[in-house]
Image (cartoon, rainbow over all chains, first blue to last red; front, side, top):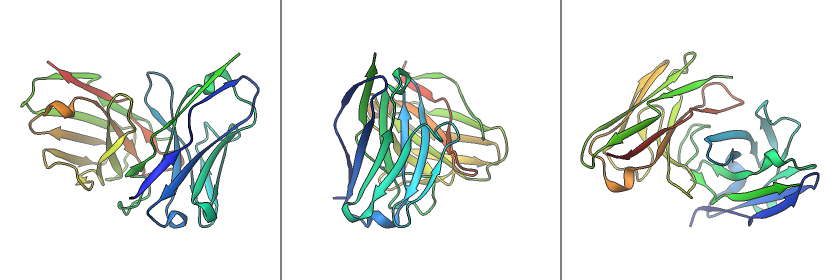
Length: 121
Length: 108
């Protein structure tokens, strides 16, 4: 089965670091762009950035550049989203998404189940 | 960054009726537009890409149209499972891909 499976919910304190993961299976993970999307409580989704695991080519949304780090390990078909110092405003659900059937970068047809990150002081 | 807008904010429709949702880009994005459906507690689901191409498994009652700056998602006969929030998203000029604010389709 083609799927993306994300790591479980996280509860952290402000200033702590965090890395969440997204593991692909059932397809050639290295050959498809994979992205991260933030959805704050009650709000719409926002693209944070994308990575091509085969080359580790990474592109960030200007709003998230310098705030997070996106990486991938193609040997284990896993993408990561990392923070060095969390803020309360990072509280959100984070989705990873890829595209395995649509031929155009930007139309993401495969989504993870989401990881809830809660940051409190 | 390309700003996307959607209207209406909420659309109240009776089951079996047609729903028409609008999406506008502040500048031309050709046909580089996708539509997603999101239900509570679920990830977004791709419905349409290329402004009018249905993604795999999407029922034929969903159709998309438009190009340039004006786009429409139509649902020909609303089923109970179609009540959700719908987002348009451009991928013409990135980073970043940008979503619209969404249209909530609820039961009249």
